[in-house]
Image (cartoon, rainbow, N blue to C red):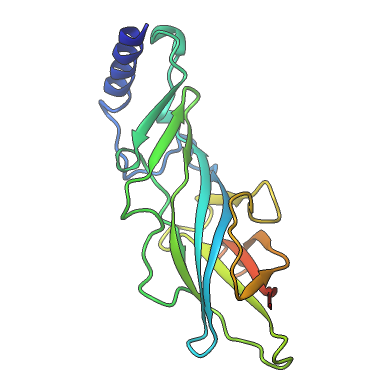
Length: 215
């Protein structure tokens, strides 16, 4: 059984990537935008630096899209329904935090987080790391500060209408959240919106550091 799975996986990989070009957007129907599901998970608030006007967090992003070039018939490959692949082998969305404090770098591109691909061509990728964003403090109620900080995610350079963001929740996942000793998280929000002028999609993940109240 184990040998059959290995051989089947090798055959799938060989057949899928024989003519695969990871630099091309994964869609065969050009007029139809690629639907990209994006959901954040907050793991920790590292710090909120009021003087530097920034918030530092540890987060991951659950991303899902369909790449029809990566689909196969399991019955032809020993009933194998999924593959776990190095993410650098497949097309990845070049997502950036547009209000980053430091250099704007694609999320997850520097670390090789694995991607899971299922037989219908669904790709699941969950990059993570330490992320910083600009956040001007509101000290009008000092010392009982309540702050609002957002991370704005977008794909720079992508023509309008080629990728559409979707989200299955209006709040980030807090399953693995570890509390901060200085700030208490009292609420979160995530949303998808479309710019009126440029017609590109943005994803906002708000740790309403209004949702962070000084302990």
